[in-house]
Length: 123
Picture (tube, rainbow, N blue to C red):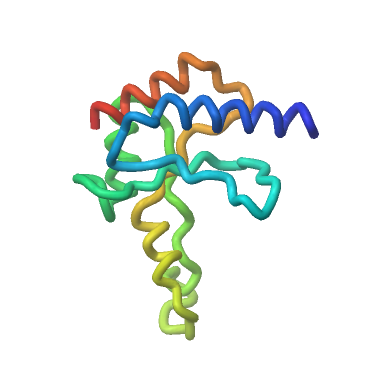
């Protein structure tokens, strides 16, 4: 387990370094209150042309051969639960609209992370 976590931490650190020059988004940091397993590497779009368009960004990255994923849709927006009561979800809705999960395999090589960074710089 420790080796797995070390791989995930190294991948997150490599993305953080590689993407630090992109001013329109940020790799969401580990929360300070817990040891995160970094299962996903979430890229948050702060501003610019992709703001509010995470699913479109996924498609744009696909054109560069990059597999990424949007966050899961909120439960109360899914067909079986539409119309059901939901608590305040403004922050969650913002994350769904603005987060793209970048490739996050423990087998990612530095050159693959660079390729993701190059694609994000071009889109």
